[in-house]
Amino acid sequence: MIEDEPSTEVQNLLSAGRKIDAIKLVREEQNIGLKEAKEWVDDYVARHPERFPKPEASSGGRFLMWAAILIAIVLTYQNFFAG
Image (cartoon, rainbow, N blue to C red; front, top):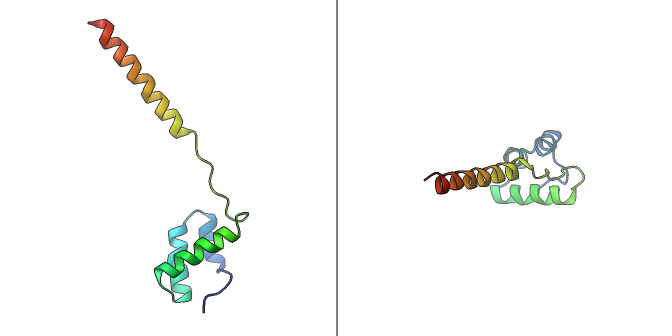
């Protein structure tokens, strides 16, 4: 029988963003298959969004993208007018 509440260790793993480890532990603790464990964890997290907020998207990726574009423009400009 699947428990309604996960163990403290599963909750700690989910809070730390270690969903895969939480799924593995749920499988072991509740003796269920991978699909069932994943669905159970997904459902549990969806029912308790306040406990497991989604991480904010970092602006670091956008910065790197714009830096690469700027470098490409500068290099193109140099190659075009340096010739």
